[in-house]
Amino acid sequence: MDTEITMRVDGARRRLTVDTRTTLLDALRERLGVTSPKKGCDHGQCGACTVLSGGRRVLSCLTLAVTQDGAEVVTAEGLAAAEATEGGPLTDGGLHPVQRAFIDCDAFQCGYCTPGQVVSAVGMLQEFARGGPSAVTRGTGAAGLDRAEVAERMSGNLCRCAAYVNIVRAVQQAAAPATDRQRPTGSEAAR
Image (cartoon, rainbow, N blue to C red; front, side, top):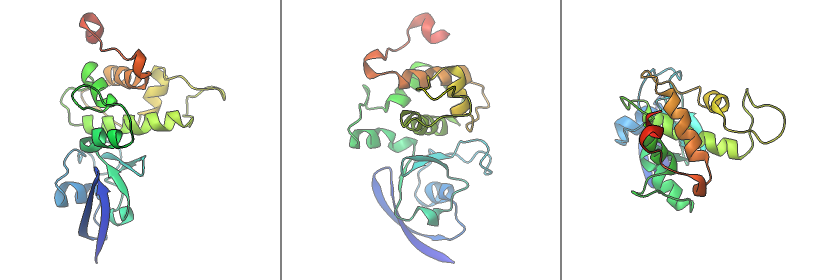
């Protein structure tokens, strides 16, 4: 059965007719031509398809497109525009701070999982800023984004190239207050 839905995807209002069994991932990639969310496992286990819906992380391969009628969906392609719309800072080159941090920290290799990693990091940092604890958060005070905290919060995103050390470093860099952000140079970037 087909139904018509409307969603805002990366800031643009999009209307389409979809079969009620169509996933958000397939609607984005095949119907709307938004290819940054990747089809990795198609079972919700790798995180390559992660997008933000209403500001929350969702696995688009497990989300039916019809459930997103009226939703605001942001993919890696639309992060910078979404950040600018919300009054957030963009880096030189017009990148979202998380995108810049991934480049600065060399937090990718083949790049297949990178859009999902970046979107997940943005959502995770928003969850962290709201004070939501993770399974490794200690006590009731403000959690710090140490390696264990970042790894736990990003655990739904797999990287077959094993760039995890640099992914954690990139998330930590993006989480730092804008005045504390510095691009790693020379030997720092190589670590």
